[in-house]
Amino acid sequence: MSAEIIDGKSLALKIKEELKKDVQELKNKGINPCLAVILVGDNKASQKYVSFKEKTCKELEIQSLVFKFDENIDETSLLNLIDELNNDPNVNGILVQLPLPKHLNQNIILEKINPLKDVDGFTPFCLGRLLNDNPLFIPCTPKGVIRMLDEYKIPLEGKQAVVIGRSVIVGKPLSLLLLKRNATVTICHSKTFNLPEITKNADILCVAVGKENFINSNMIKEGAVIIDIGINVTKSGKVVGDVNFDEVRQKASYITPVPGGVGPMTIAMLMENTIYAAKLQQRKS
Ligand code: GUN
Picture 1 (cartoon, helix red, strand yellow):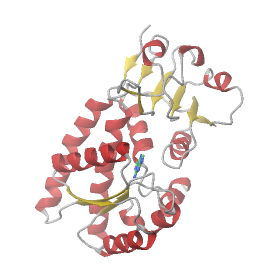
Picture 2 (tube, rainbow, N blue to C red; picture 1 turned 60 degrees about the vertical axis):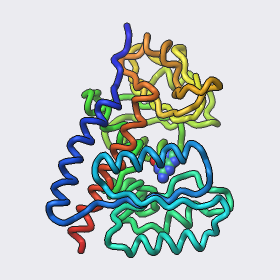
Picture 3 (cartoon, protein in one colour; picture 1 turned 180 degrees about the horizontal axis):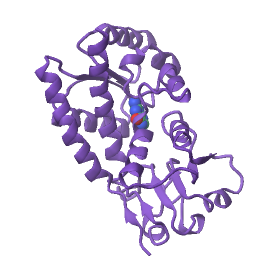
């Protein structure tokens, strides 16, 4: 058996085509959606992600403002900028690219973002709303994963879903979304004992670890659905996920590739959240 590939790239293209129409509808009403992105330091991966976000905004005719700062910027300057963006009626979404340099307190900075503009869904307000089954903005990567599972009509109710990774960006919100869909969710992390025993029980296995070849075919159940959220660059410069794709696809029923799986969906969901922010603020003002 060879798994069906979950084609995130094509699905993201389809979603972006729909979103383009939404943007034009808003523009016809005189609303120009605008996303502000803050990038601090010279992390190469972050620079790449931000340039993808900028490029996608352009495709959809969403205005993007990118604020790039030197590694050494002080916290007060960043907080002042966020304050300005919060108060700027032309800015609908505000995103601070993570990770931030160590001297900056990520919690203080994220908490400064007006939750109505928090298109990443990382403020305590948005995370609390998600925990309370009443989401405002859902973090983009977990939202994209659920959208992919839905597109391929993969049932979640009653299934054993295992999430490896407990980050605020991916693991925790994804676990909540799977739980909301009535999956039985197990969260694993770097201190988990007997990981293969747990992963072998998973009907749906979501991996967000950041280690090449972390999951091999001995760790999965026959017919499992494999969602690879890792993005790693090999010594030879190739982009790969956390899953040994060639080996695991022989045993799985569905699998996401890297690249072309979860990554493009994350950006599509960011665009969706930005358009939603523009609609939301239109209603509030
Ligand atoms: N760093 C890694 N993933 C993300 C993301 O989805 N949003 C932001 N802001 N930073 C990230």
